[in-house]
Amino acid sequence: MQNPPEPQDEIDEEMQARRAVREAIQRKIAADNEREREARNARRWKVERDPAEYERQKERQRQQYIPKHGGPVRPYEKIVATTKAEREEQAKARHAEREKNRYASMTPAERQAKSDRVADEAWAARRRDKGVPEDIIQAGLAIRIQEREAKRAVQAQVETAEEAMRNLPHFGMMGSG
Image (cartoon, rainbow, N blue to C red):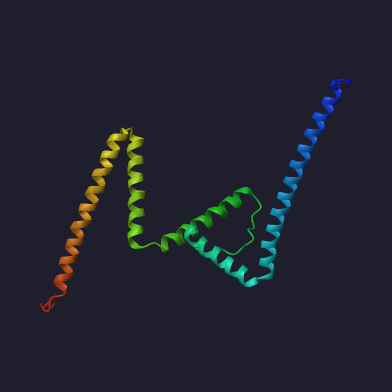
């Protein structure tokens, strides 16, 4: 007759099974990491071997950068600033330059829309500072926008009428003399 296995033997077998599972998982993770490393290296080496593709990639990235940031990638310039205040001042100056370039590249309609938005925000802020309730501010803002659009429509009609009058063959014949 065989003796029943002792509890220590069962514990050892269980630990060996766990160790085998852990080692298998570690081997799989190491293999996956190695495979990913090989893929990264292959991509990097391909770029190193193919400078034309690398230049095309850089140009694509530059073109993607322009609409997001309002201009081309600026070249690196060493910022000569020793204090935090100087760095902040120079950062503000760079930001102002970027905004100026963005504004310069806007169409007249975009400029007008930005101007209207800024004016409306300032108008609403003044009302809030006076303690006017938000629903009254929103209603006033809607009226303000409608009045602005009506005024511009009238101005456009006047300009159209003046242009039509200027195009008449006898326009300007009556001199002021």
